[in-house]
Image (cartoon, rainbow, N blue to C red; front, side, top):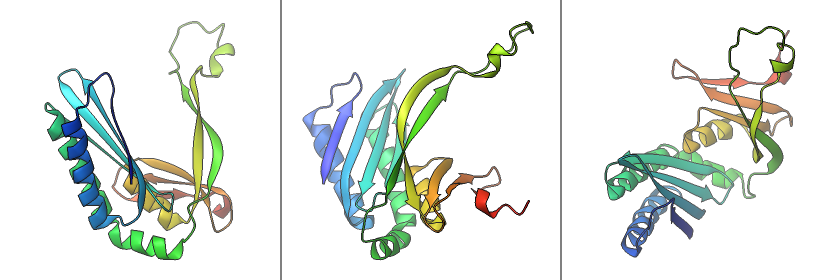
Length: 194
């Protein structure tokens, strides 16, 4: 497996890099099976270290975890523990996923934008001009082609609140999201009975 271990304005020593490889190899061998690469990024935020771990699985699914602590090794330990929990919970589904999907997940090209917040103002004369938010950043995005079950698993593995995907069943764009009540919501515009 390929590793990319880096620090944002931090010097990551050989001992920490070896520790990261050893721990992740153990976790991934136990739960994931066939990973292709892992990206581990360390940064410092005020008096805390932050660690982000991203593991790319051979089927195209991505698992992500984060950890924060005052010590850099403890920050990685928290991220690694979270990664282990995510992969353990998804282990059976990952095995079924590997068996059912010999080819990697197809990815559609898309664009993602970061928009500036709309500021409230007392001036109503420029109201028509201010209806479109300002684009702060424009990035490339990849939209995976998945079944609904795989999309939920990807959302849980990536530890994200919402995921847009192309539904393999009919080719339309769908969204799964984590609801405030803890359940998972699914939006499929093609099934609207209205």
